[in-house]
Image 1 (cartoon, rainbow, N blue to C red):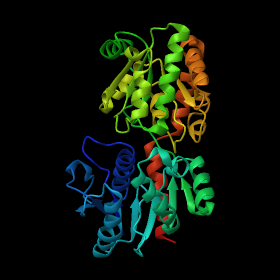
Image 2: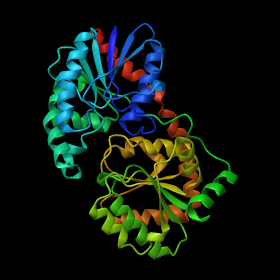
Image 3: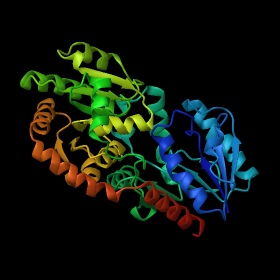
Image 4: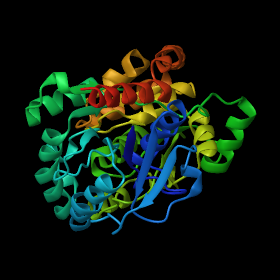
Length: 375
């Protein structure tokens, strides 16, 4: 069979979100199925390291699809023509975007529908495109793969898709995530937080990550406890808007919040391993990969109780209402002062992490593809 894959997020040194998912799933898939031919559709010059096996043919399709107008041109014209040219039997799209005008069988991975529930979190042009086209993608797909039971129910309820057409394959976390030794922990704290303990936030500073309430809750925590503990923020400031900027600048303890920007995988593992606790305040997620990364690194978790997050973390976290600054601050106090609780959460996290692996994710993705191919 000839299987095409939307690989436009496989960007060297810029793997985030869709890119990591594509890399982890597709690299396993092509190696596990040498009997099939895979055609990778890029929207710009690609890196050879993403051509994972001999059964992969890279194809660059213009124009680079990074704007709603270009999305439509790329998927409805360039992809459609390429599907026909290369005699493709199935198109697999890890970011959920499909070619609605093509007659080729298609599988969409729809991670979440944040834009349906919190449209104000996105720029107007992107919001308008997503709200118009994703219902069409969902109905066009021969089958949908999503990353949590929460997202499956949301897709069913929001778009009226029958449950029998949606599969769930939980995300995983990199195999390199593991606990670190005490000397390494001290080195990390020396580098980032002047040898102080720290809460850790990992993620793009997007509004739905709820960074504003985290900042305010951390300020409240510091005021209440006079603790030396800092807040380490790992992630790019892609969405650093005036509201976030003004909130940050009006905090009392800005000097205790440290920004690292994007870090490479090995250093991220060390940062997890040296932390006091992961704080994950998102009010909307389709999965929440940092939860699994933290569990693998034996880092206790303080998490929002919203959407899929309890489904992922289970008993390996304590939870708060993401819309309550007081509740977030209260749980920061709890986790920082209760060593017995931290030890218990680490133990539960080690067991819980075993339920999530990219091998399992890739196997489920292939089952979904096979179901469509043989329908």
